[in-house]
Image 1: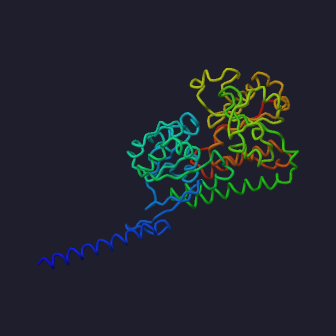
Image 2 (image 1 turned 45 degrees about the vertical axis):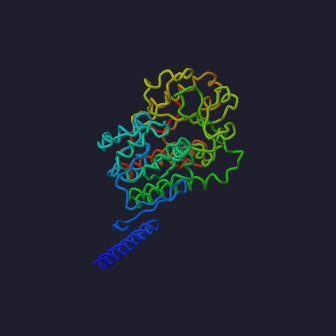
Image 3 (image 1 turned 90 degrees about the vertical axis):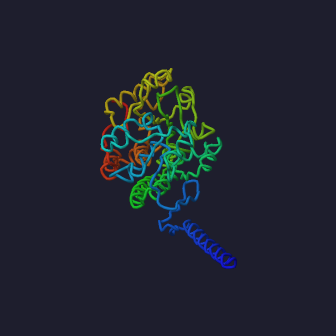
Amino acid sequence: MKRMRTLLVGLSAALALTLTACGGANNEDAATGSKTSSGAAALTITDVKNRKVTFDHPPQRVILGEGRGLFATALLNKANPVENVVAIGNDLDSAAPSFKKSLEKVVPAVAKLPTIGNLAKGDVSVENLVGLKPDALVMSADHFDTLSTNGMLEKIDQAGIKYVVTDFRQHPLTNTTKSMDVLGKLLGKTDAATKFTKEWTDTVTRIQERTKDIPAEKHPKTFLWRAAGLKDCCATVAKSNLGEFINAAGGNNLGDSILKSESGDVTNEKVIAENPPIIIATGGSWDPKKEAGKNKKQAVMHAELGYQTDPTTAGKTLAGLLQTEGFNQLQAGQKHHFYGVWHQFYDSPLNFLAMEQFAKWLHPDQFKDIDPAAHWQKIHAEYLPIKATGTFFSELPK
């Protein structure tokens, strides 16, 4: 009897080892896109940081680290932009309220999404993330960089939360299509991602083909004034963000030569001394009551643009920025080469439309046949669940 029991135990152990080995083989196969031991399709995604992330099955519960991730999901899933999204960052109300209001009208579920806080500000707890039972967390490249240095990323790893990194903000010219591909795979919308990235690539390539032969000396020095009027003058960018699109559209982004980092502030005296022939100010629909007191020198809180902004208001608030001390001396204002563009293009896959408008402002003769406003309408009709109401590009009233 003892020998029989010993034999049975040995057989059971051997069987267990065999099953374990089979399970291990399936998990290893998952990294190449085969099936897991449960039979579910595995998924491997390479994100913009060149990280390979493997999921045992297509994620069903996704947290968007930024609420503005809905810009992308709305393009990928016109019928239901919040499908499989269980929570978002809390930035949407403050950063893009007019977009959120427009989206809530056609997708009421947006208003009910839980918020996790702001990854960049360190007010997100791992316990809260775990409680949402996510299959995946989406974070931006700059947030990834910050969390890598403050210990938060280590905690997320220890909690077993898988994450992918996207980037529409730091280097959008390189990473926009990569990011859309990442999200398309993550959300099971690869066909939609392929269609959109073709539209994006075709537009950007068409612009670059026209500007590549323009001599460097004819690329006008252009100052990008970020969130103009929202705080004291003047925030801008260098070799990143919308500055990349200015250069690609045939301009010479002034920030590249005056900043030592990707973003920073310059004084209004510096802007006056440089006297750029073209200034592009980014604006939005920020709440002036919340921003009151931040601005000490500008005559208006900010350049007003967005889904609820009419053209007259957009033009008047843009003109108000020229009342900044000394700015009446600027040739950009005197020659009506002072423009406004929606701030959120800087963090959205819709950024290529801003590039199109930049090209038209910078080189009107070469791009006189281009109509960015009509293209904006087309993109909404074809890809987005919301209508293209409001104003997103502005010029000085004449």
